[in-house]
Image (cartoon, rainbow, N blue to C red):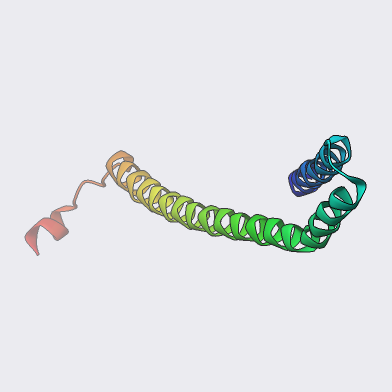
Amino acid sequence: MADKNQSTFIGGIFVGAVIGAVAGLLAAPRKGRDTRKILNKTVSAVPQMAEDIASSVQLQADKLSAATGDRWHDTLDRLSTAISAGIVASQSVRELNTPTQPKSAREVDE
């Protein structure tokens, strides 16, 4: 869900930038021929801009994925250590609370 919202947001930024650039070019006080040349250069640059944005988003997603994986493994290690410590502590408490049987006379002699 977050990925969908993020890609929608980035797509919105991209579309807004393109519309803004086109509107700026059309409203500029230039001759029509000059404006069309600039507009053609801008339109031809759009695929490269889209590729750059996609690469940037992919790089950030990879970094986030790696960081999340590292944190997940650290959390699992800490949880495993805590569980082991809890088991040892409960066994110690159980041993302390277990009443010991008095030794019989025969066990004492041996």
